[in-house]
Length: 123
Image 1 (cartoon, rainbow, N blue to C red):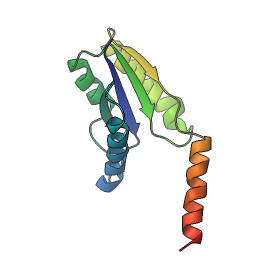
Image 2 (cartoon, rainbow, N blue to C red; image 1 turned 120 degrees about the vertical axis):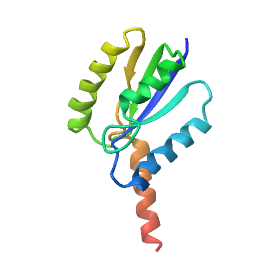
Image 3 (cartoon, one colour; image 1 turned 90 degrees about the horizontal axis):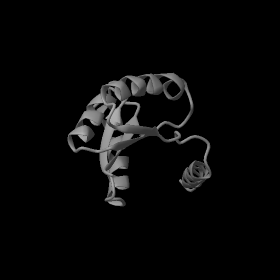
């Protein structure tokens, strides 16, 4: 079964912010050649979620995993993304869709916070 992954960022009017999401996606892709990857943005940038799904559909993926690169469970996680996913699922009934959890409160995130604090202390 061909599988695709969409790394979904918020999106920004500032291109350098969008580029950080793309950079993160490249880091993930470099470690994994099992899936087809796309980067998408919820707003202010391209491609959007529907465009990323269309790209993966052209590659004939049968399952798409959507990974929201969001730190907290706000309205985008609780409402906006599920609403968009419902519309996209209707447009692509032949593809199975799964969403991962957002980044959230995670020991790995806490470790990064501690690392950044330590960096600031040594400045």
